[in-house]
Amino acid sequence: MSNITLMDGGMGQELIHRAGGAPTSLWATQVMIERPELIGTVHDDFFAAGARLAKTNSYAVHRDRLIGSGFEDRFAPLLRTAVEQATAARDRAGGGSIAGCLGPLRASYRPDLHPPAEEAMDLYCEVATILAPGCDLLICETVASLDHARGALMGAQWGGLPVWLSLTVDDGDGTRLRSGEPLAAALDLAGLGAAAILVNCTTPESIPAALAILSRAGLPFGAYANGFERITDAFLQDRPTVDTLAARRDLSPERYAEHALRWADLGATLIGGCCEVGPSHIAATARALAAAGHTLT
Picture 1 (cartoon, rainbow, N blue to C red):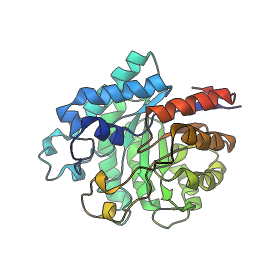
Picture 2 (cartoon, helix red, strand yellow; picture 1 turned 180 degrees about the horizontal axis):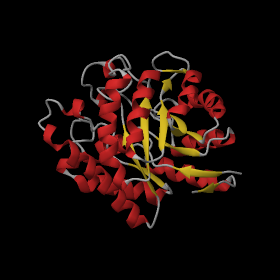
Picture 3 (tube, rainbow, N blue to C red; picture 1 turned 90 degrees about the vertical axis):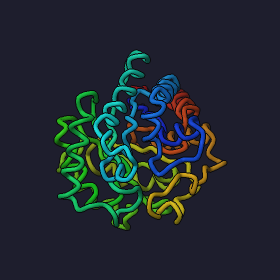
């Protein structure tokens, strides 16, 4: 059996569900201004469910995403708030790790909009250096193309912490990035400093094929799936809101845990959840992994 790092689940969707009201294109960023304590509560619930690693609520905190929001001058304070809420929850839980989250620039699942690696590197560098002082590692999330991966990894290195690269694959074909490029081509990027390689924000069913490829990288690897029915065309438009996406009705906590057990059987040692995977899913996963003889770290 394995030592498995159990990560938290989807912060953004959990905040939207708890905050109420219509979601905006800022996703959960605005909550850090209006109700920052809510972020800490979500972190608390994931730690109570058994998670040992919390990702900061900084996925969408990028200068380009704040343009026109009225919060442009809050860029650095928002990042620091995300770290403070995660670390305070970690301290209340009595231990755990903090991963500073670096989401995609401009938009999720849109590699066509992502800036070239050299430009992206500077933007990621700025985020990484602000997040790093309060974190144990940095995680580049929902990386949809090879060029996106290059820019994110090169920029995140400036944080001076281990960097995890988490790629997002086609919902129906876990062997391909959302850009259409082969996932196997991303293995060559390990030389840019990735300390671990994962797949996230895709259907649970697409992950086994992805893990079979990631296992060849010679790095710790893992997965955290989303609970969306599918990524709709409407969500791929400019400044989308999550009300264009629907949560699956068939992905109960127990069903999600069954998927996670299969990932562990395939050698994954980094397991958690993404959008629409809440504390109850993480709790069920923690129970299932422990019952199977795995040690949660």
